Length: 425
Ligand code: NAD
Image 1: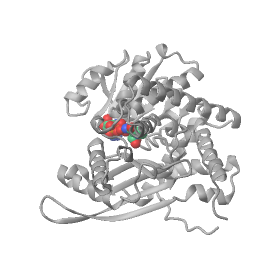
Image 2: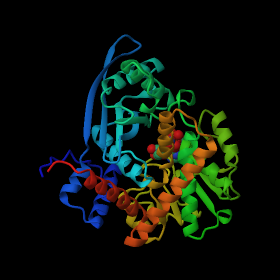
Image 3: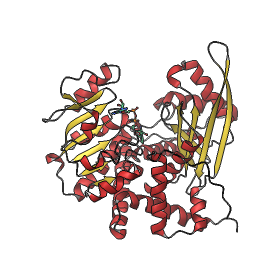
Image 4: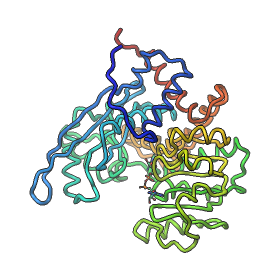
């Protein structure tokens, strides 16, 4: 089989390269053939578009946009659209593959995809962003589709952008298709529970792991890095289950209180304070790095990638790490963490509650019906618990970490499905 490798990702601690090294390790354990390796690795479709957009000053700027569908073996492509100045095709490729594995781990009938536009939404007006989003949608009109490829928000985009996407798609096709995109505002067919879904999944998988470690939530403590959508909801829901949150952090710093932090109070403070915890007086200000190494039972990195590295992994005191963020642990830190006997619930399992409720949004749109919050939460919890026990079982069977087990489960599922579907040759 002939295949030309894309340019390598050079940063050795790059999270995307970290993901590929875990993919390779899982493939080795599964004993997958070279042919299947490339079938699973090479994206099914990669689209690059130039998007001329008139800015508010009357000048036209051409933005580059990408959409990569890594796999449609399990179902239509699924994945967010990232607006960020540093977006590259390589990054989008790897994030698309990540989505394939994540959807397979939680057993939802989607392949993996990702989109991105190299732009700085923080320096653009709402009108400029809207024109860019509409231009991107039109350029991808034959790529997107409720049975082909279903976008969603990612960094730099949210419900507002998804509403524009849905509207532009409806104009071009001459009919409204709500299920073409998820993460929409509630009034346009968004789902109840989507906002909290990722944090909720983090809580459910943390409790499942604590049960295996015989940690009683009412006698356990935690530190949570990142106090945005994922981190704050995870902290809040963990508190409801009895866990005492000793440390939280965001871009403004880290905050520690040995008696436990009142998370509802911290969320209200953040919301009234322009979105950050700056000046939060209910806890002592500590260093961001210190938060990761606090003497707590549970650590939830829920801010960004590559924060647990080979230089700080040996100092981590938590018995359990539940990855709310994508790629918070570099591959080089894996060995140190495994040697220390710390259990890690990996990102492709722990933060899959979000894509699970996105799937529920798509299902509701297709049946033209709205489920109650209670039904959504129950179904999401069940799906997260099942995924955790499947991954745990594989980790016992192969005597590997939960991370490797999650990759084994996902890769095996996609490879087996491919064999049933068949191809050329
Ligand atoms: P967000 O923008 O709502 O929140 C990010 C938080 O991290 C903010 O509180 C920010 O201040 C904080 N932060 C930024 N830099 C930091 C630093 N250096 N130290 C400590 N805190 C810092 O984002 P989010 O939606 O909560 O996403 C967080 C992570 O979870 C990302 O890796 C994202 O890819 C991943 N994720 C999110 C979802 C979702 O549904 N939102 C789903 C799956 C994965």
